[in-house]
View (cartoon, rainbow, N blue to C red):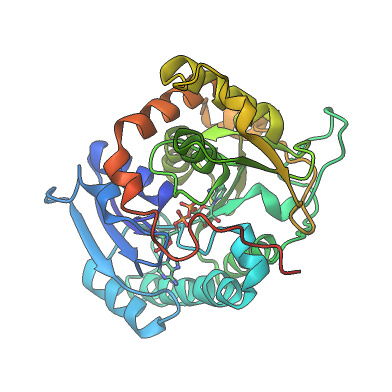
Amino acid sequence: MKLLVTGGAGFIGSAVVRQAIAAGHEVVNLDALTYAACLANLAEVEDSPRYAFEQADIRDRAALDKVFALHAPDAVMHLAAESHVDRSIDGPSDFVDTNITGTFNMLEAARKFWAAVGKPGRFRFHHVSTDEVYGSLPADKSVLFTETTAYDPRSPYSASKAASDHLVRAWHETYGLPVVLSNCSNNYGPYHFPEKLIPVVILNALAGKALPIYGDGSNIRDWLYVEDHAAALLCVLQKGQNGRRYNIGGENERSNLELVETLCEILDQKRPRQDGKPYRDQITFVTDRPGHDARYAIDPSRIRSELGWRPSVTVEEGLAKTVQWYLDNEDWWRALQDRNGVGARLGVSA
Ligand SMILES: NC(=O)c1ccc[n+]([C@@H]2O[C@H](COP(=O)([O-])OP(=O)(O)OC[C@H]3O[C@@H](n4cnc5c(N)ncnc54)[C@H](O)[C@@H]3O)[C@@H](O)[C@H]2O)c1
């Protein structure tokens, strides 16, 4: 299959591109190369004859039409987005422009291309979204996000993703565009941009800096290893039913405090502090994020039972692999640390 992957120079998109090339697909990576992009994530595929890169902005409709006409993809996997909640609090307009208008442009460009090639039923527009569109769950562990949970986004980021999800549904119902949607929980793993919680904790720990935990650390997230998400996305694309939505999650609920303590324990084993003290001594509680959702947790029964997808690692295995990857790839993260906003506390301006 020839896949047009948007956002393929980002954290999850690059994992999708690497796996798709390894599986024998052709991939066209369309990415604007914002502050969050890193082409080094694609070093292992950049020389493949089945890989092409197009620097284009999804806010630029004419550029999208050109890419569709030039490459004639069999399917689209749409991941390009502004993705950092804290940045969405400080500057929501980029999120509206890229996540909503950009998705609108992608849908229109895809619809025009799909019509021009005779509306093949096998074409797919796979919209990659987040569980954050469902809002915040109560502490009761029996309550999970399912595919029928009502939307209740509470941050500019999640509201912009929710809006884009609605557009995708509408283009399916109104124009018949073949689509699949997926809503995934928090990802972690190699190539995670060093402004997100897990890389921040690992890199601050190694630098002897404070490990910042928002509020009291009780906020719960459901963690999934990025390679497992990428595998799930390729599974949804190829086996998912036209028009259907799939929740993707690892069934690994952890409070932020538990997560950071686990990372500290792994670091204590792999790279003990020179003074012999535990890394948890560096934990510091900081002002909470405005509107910080209390709990996310995915019920992945549909993707498990209908498509047979399962995560390949437990969260303990995935976190250990992730810490080891950051220890082994200092050149990668050092090169990103001077990018705009990295290392600064963002999202407290509300
Ligand atoms: N990170 C998570 O935990 C998570 C969980 C569920 C869903 N998602 C979704 O998965 C997708 C990818 O997330 P990520 O964490 O890899 O994000 P990321 O920020 O690491 O990467 C986003 C990529 O999109 C590109 N991009 C941004 N604006 C663009 C534009 N206007 N035109 C073209 N390209 C543009 C960037 O250059 C970057 O390469 C997003 O749609 C996000 O909402 C993320």
